[in-house]
Image (cartoon, rainbow, N blue to C red; front, side, top):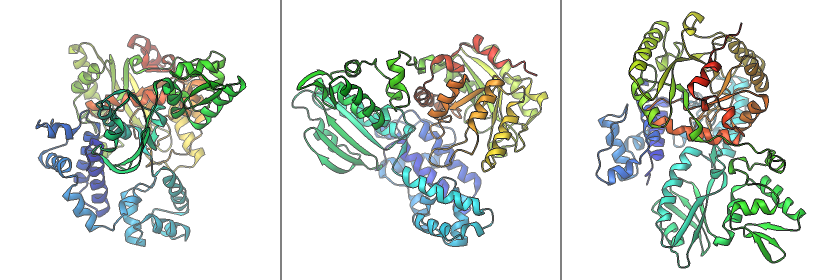
Length: 575
């Protein structure tokens, strides 16, 4: 039975998808999508609140009808409205929506024109060359569908980090209450903060006689017990996520944590260092012959092979071993380092809260400044701002700054980069702003040369401070557009423009490799929430995880600076 906010959000998203395939009222569709986002971002579990008899909070966009559906999902495990829609449409058609590049409108066309309602039928139609014959598709789209099907097959069993976090944190709290438990930690790609997670590897230390294994397999979210033993058990949750639990002795805890955290390539590299010293390294410890010489802590494992502790996020065998040996490991950025957020939306466009509400929420998160950056007019679906509305918002921000304490509002805009590289608003409007974020929101399918030139031209605008979500990806839904990122990074450096690391869990764009590229080229990165509600500031932690994977320290992050130090970076006096 779905019990997490992520489950409720998934149901609302599926309802929205099916309504869109059916051609329903766009306002109704948008209401479900907004509800999915509000629920998914809410910091407390609705299940916990409802079971405690508490009145769930009133969230933006969720009225009596959607509140009733949330209660229904939590208490019954299903939603009658979704069940009805599934009966009206071909079974499994929503699987098509999980293929990157296939939105509801294209799925609708495939169903109506070709009778494609399953992944197998989609692959067959693409291989037969039938898709290119449909209006609005073409040969290149058909090729991308086949490419996306291959990607989808690889990613089908992975979930976004933020979704995995909901399941992991609840399970950790549950296991900590088992008799005799001392430590509980999630290792694997989750601990390395990868943007998607295939499964959860949990390590536990406990006193003799602990009931942790029995408690684990009895967890009320377990759908299937794959294995149960004294030191290892495996289950599949009702969400489909596999979880492995290992009970390790205290003297092996550090070795096990290292073994089950690092990527395979990293672990092999460290093991070779151990072998070069005549040592044997495994999940039980570091041994010289039969004698254990290290393993109780991760620090002791690394020290045994002549290395300082390497942060979990760096353990990918991408140069961290060499950097550690040379004493050049970066001091990685932390959430506490962030002083502000340069990408925030409000009710003026497609956000859910007022400017003042967003300011107070940011202040509660420990931030001292935020930039209010609504969408520009081209994005009509988000009620983007034209010059007149933007001017009124600028005046409002100036009035609010006069009364707010503990936080400063910056005047900004997320302005669309048009297909030819010009911006959606004139320079006469942009020059009045503190922060101008340039962003691609359409024509993701442009050829590499045109897409690159488009972005480079936008970065030549003297008012642009920041390039938002630079590759345009949506994890599991849309591949990055084809662009020469090295040219973009170098242009950003020449124009003193920052690149955004968008912390929304479905974006995390820049990815870790691109963050490292920006660092190596000397380009500052801004870790932004792209907040559309007061709950979204909590997503900054995922941006921090991605930044750490990209080797970024506080010095490489623009918004780790206090406002006085940031302002010179935003004041681009370039001709």
